[in-house]
Length: 254
Image: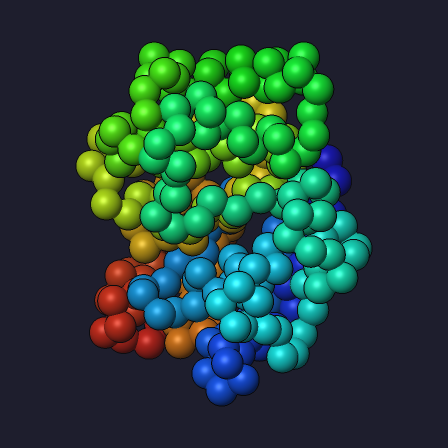
């Protein structure tokens, strides 16, 4: 069986905010089609900046790439605006869920489909698929999104992203602020989506032990640099990973 060709390549990128703050320092990573990749690190390690660099969203926060390249299926992402990237298969779920609180759950989910200008028939079929993956959203479809639980809002945000029919979904801090049982449920859905539809995921996450159970490959960031990378199993097996992750040790590169 041949190894899938990486369809996202991040090569030696540096990112600046306001032309002064260096947030990423030579970050490289690769995502193969059909894989789940974990991007680990503590607050301030550079996870969110990496995701926004891939999605071409740094400009909204007065940031920019100062060095390096990001290629999506062979094309330089800096030549593609965020909306074009969505139409070509990359969509990001921002940290904090960001639902439209006054719209219903269903209206929120449907907004993702509008970005791709699907027909009514396509929208209905895509929505039905979302409800199969997230049956709880179907139960709450007429509820105002702002009145749903944090876990349900995270499902809404992911469902809205999936309505764009993406090839790669970037999710920033999926588990933040959610009860463990809800986090397990959502990670299970992500794993199912990956198996059933071949959707790839890049998960920026602080919950190291949990995300490594579901990921295929992982990168660990510290101070804007890749400190470790390998299969998820390799990183999970390291005795020093937790102490390093919490800033207490520097791992040996065995």
